[in-house]
Amino acid sequence: MNLSLYLLTVLIWGTTWIALKLQLGVVAIPVSIVYRFALAGLILFAILLLSRRLQPMSRRGHGICLAQGLCLFCVNFMCFLTASQWIPSGLIAVVFSTATLWNALNARLFFGQKIAANVLGGGALGLGGLGLLFWPELSGHAASRETLIGLALALLGTLCFSAGNMLSSLQQKAGLRPMTTNAWGMLYGAGMLAVYCVFSGIPFDMEWNTRYIGSLLYLVIPGSVIGFTAYLTLVGRMGPERAAYCTVLFPLVALNVSAFYEGYQWTAPALFGLVLVMLGNVLVFRKPKAKVEAPVAALR
Image 1 (cartoon, rainbow, N blue to C red):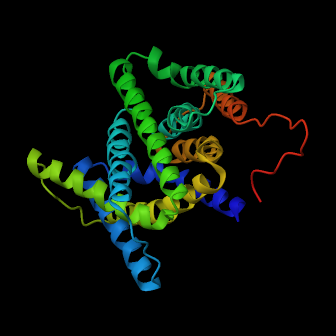
Image 2: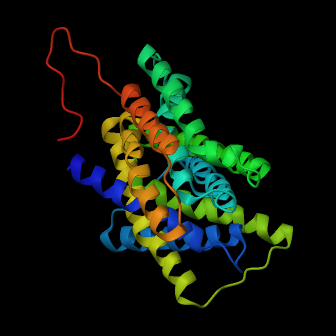
């Protein structure tokens, strides 16, 4: 079951980056995010109510859902969509793969877990790999400032995503299932962003064309309803550190999609950088050998 959820998450989220890019246009970025998560939250609520699986929550649970909505379904997507204006979506996916390192660091902050030497070494490899991946743009004459801003926003979005992982883990430890917390979190996130749009004077436009509607539906159903439920279920079953290991495979899917649709050009330094990022993430989550008991498989 864990393996199925793992592969499903990789395939869905490895391809959502292009859909995110297709959202850019007439509709403002915050409004696109509102549409996505308002629709996804309503679909989840409909499923839960029809199947009678909606769980009651305490005030504390709603407070955590509010924070989860801000981190997972609001700020991080503002960062990712804004970053995609300046850097290829596949490279955003590579930056997102550093969620493995962020989750290890946040597990230390939230749950007091020790950070092993392999995590520090893997983090160094990952950062070196990102530098190589971005080197053609960083050294080029046209990218400079915009590329750095895009990189910074992608990293900030990944940090927010990681914080949302920790909050979901807390909810699941309290017995709340991801479908219920996602339904509330998505509506909270969409609601907060809608209020921001109203006070900022951002119009709620809509593009009634195949490109926008098609990408929106893909992001709502596979990308949000299915993808977030599958991934956060893994967070509860395997822990946030090990669940984030699936982000290691996102770049393999996303960069190849980016090469086909966006004309991303693979170079020798970029390929080597991707290898370093992958090795760094693998090193972060390499399990130490058990001294007494045999290691338990991560995926069953």
